[in-house]
Image (cartoon, rainbow, N blue to C red; front, side):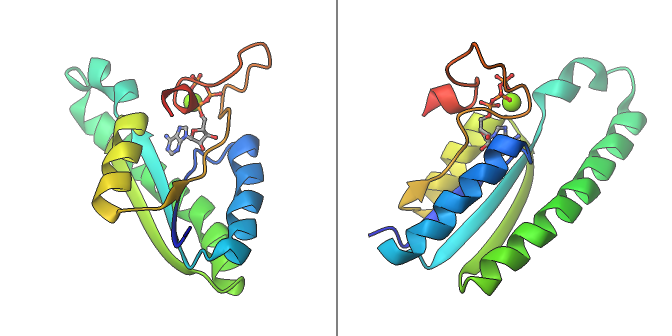
Length: 131
Ligand SMILES: Nc1ncnc2c1ncn2[C@@H]1O[C@H](COP(=O)(O)OP(=O)(O)OP(=O)(O)O)[C@@H](O)[C@H]1O
Ligand SMILES: [Mg+2]
């Protein structure tokens, strides 16, 4: 039933905690996990017109850092017996999550209720509230 799981992460503590739920879905039949990190285009669009070269460099750095964060997550999931696919995109996070969900025909999405901002007074973050 839960064969293919989409696990979008911004590498926040809350997203890391959500990984435990992914692992627990193994008993419910989960076999494959797609780890998705979206480099938020919205952060760059406004200044991209003025500093194209710098932006490209920053995006490359972010991509490298994302890969470094993803590697241990990938290892952990593989050790648990999952097939793992990694996607790093430059896009708007919630739109990209929906695009990958549809393209990959996933059976469940596991996201944190909060991410990097994690403001306790707010019930859900702006990405998680879309789901
Ligand atoms: N850039 C991203 N790439 C992949 N997954 C993300 C990304 N941003 C958020 N998520 C997922 O959505 C969850 C909720 O994050 P969200 O951004 O909604 O909360 P927040 O960062 O606390 O609030 P906000 O971004 O609205 O200030 C995260 O735990 C993560 O699973
Ligand atoms: Mg966020």
